[in-house]
Length: 124
Image 1: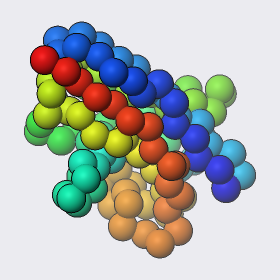
Image 2: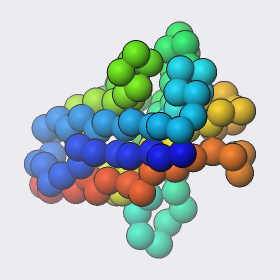
Image 3: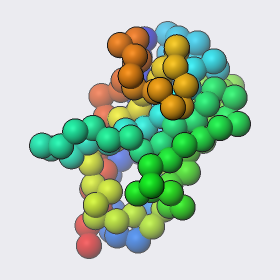
């Protein structure tokens, strides 16, 4: 299983960035997927998740209304559109795929697959 994130970078507050995630070696179209982020010295925190059917999504309160998660099962791609970025959004963003979970249990199973992360830095 391989999970790869891309799209991170250094941006100014108030601007946008779109992260991408692709996964191979698993059943992409039947797996819930999500994004977590982590700042050095802090625990990894949930950002957003999307069901395999794209009919259900879930967001952390801190990003609701600013971030949008989406996916295309035919392309085996997932995205996180981040608008109106704030300095507190600075973190390493990780993509996670769960083959036996849901958007509510994502990242709890030892079977979940993680990418290596992509750095997002938001400056004032």
